[in-house]
Image 1: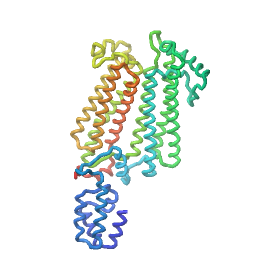
Image 2: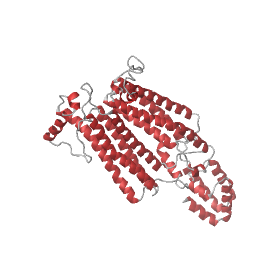
Image 3: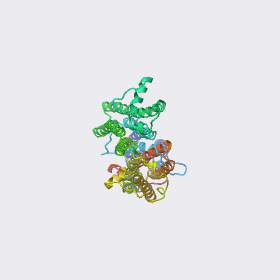
Image 4: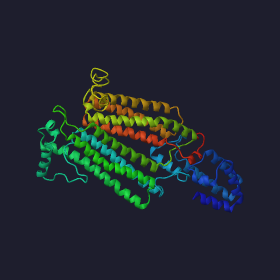
Length: 475
C-alpha cells in the first residue's frame, strides 16, 4: 500500500521524486529496501521529513503524514524509554518475516507463511505429544506397571471389558517373575491399576502415530513439504514406529526368569536406556524441525550480535551434548534402581566414593550394571552439566548478542539449577513417583532449552549478513 502510493505521487511531481530519491540515495536507502525492511532509523526519518518544506506545498502534508505513520508502525516495539523489548513468542515471526525475501534461503515449507504456520503447529504438537509420552512412561516405570501386560500386538487390542476377561489377564500376570517375587498376593483391583497404566502408555503411543501420519499425508498432498523435509519426517516416523518394537523388546527382558532368586525381576538397563534414548531422539528431531520451519533465519540485530552468537555456539554445542549424555546416564540409574541406593547427599553413605565401584568383571560392566558406579557417574555428570551451563552463562554476559539469546541462556541456567535440585530431592526422598516423574520431565525440559539455544545461535545466511549494521542501533 505504502509503496504504490509513493510511486503514484512521484509520477505526479517530478521534482518531488528527484528530491526523495536524492535523500534516500544519500542515506543508503532504495525504494525496494524500504518495502522489504521492517523499519529504519529515526535519524533517517528525521532527515527525510526535514526536507519536506522545500517540496511542493500540495504534496507536503501527504508525504509527511505517510512517513510519520510508517515510522510509528515500525517502532511499536519500543517502550517509553526507547529500550528494545524482546518477546520469545515473536522470535520466529520476526525471523521468518525478515527472511521472507532473502535470496539463497531454503525453506522447508514452500507454500508461504500460512503453510509454514500450519506445519509448525503440527510439528510442535507432535513434539509435545512425545514429551507427554516420556512423562507417562516415567510414571509407568515408577509405579511398576510396565510388566503388567505380558503380551504385545503391533496394532493393539481392546482392554478387558468383563470380569472374566480381567481374570484371564490376571492369571497371565501371575505367571510372571514380577508377581512371584515382588507382587505376590496382589488383589485384582491393584492389578487393574497397573494394567491401565501400561495400557494407556501403549495406546497413547499408537494415537501419536495416527496424529502424526494423517496431517503428514495431508501436507504432502497439498505440496507444502519439500523433499528434504519429507525425508526427515519419514525418518522420524519410522523411528517412532520402531519405538513400539523397542518398548516390547524392553518389556520382554523383564518377563524372563532372573538369574537368581535373590535378584529382583526388572527390565534390562540397556534396553530401557535404548527405549528412552530413542524417545529423546524423536523429540529432539521433531522440536528442531519445527523450529526450522517457523524460524528459518536466526534472530540478529547487528554483525556484532552475529559474532557473539558464533562464540556462544562454540560453547552451546558441547554443553548440549553433555546434557544429553547426562540424561542417558539417568536411564541406567532407572534401569538399575540405583536411585533407591545411597540416599544421602553429597556423600554416598558414609564415603565419597563407594568401595565396590569396580567390583564387576569385565571392568566396563560397572558403568552400566553396577548400582554404585552408575549412581556415582550420574552425580558427576550432573555436577559437570551444572558447572558447564554456569560457565556458558558467565561467558555470555561479556558478549554482545541478541536479547533473546541472552534471556534464553539465563533461563537455561535457571532450569539446570532446578533440575539438580529435583535430582537431589528425589534421591533424599527415596524416589517418590511425583519427584521421580518431575526429575525425568526436567531432564527433557533442560534438553529442550539447549536445543532452542543451539538453534537460535546457528549460522546466519549470507543474504541476511549483508543487510545488518555493524552494531545495534540504540534509540
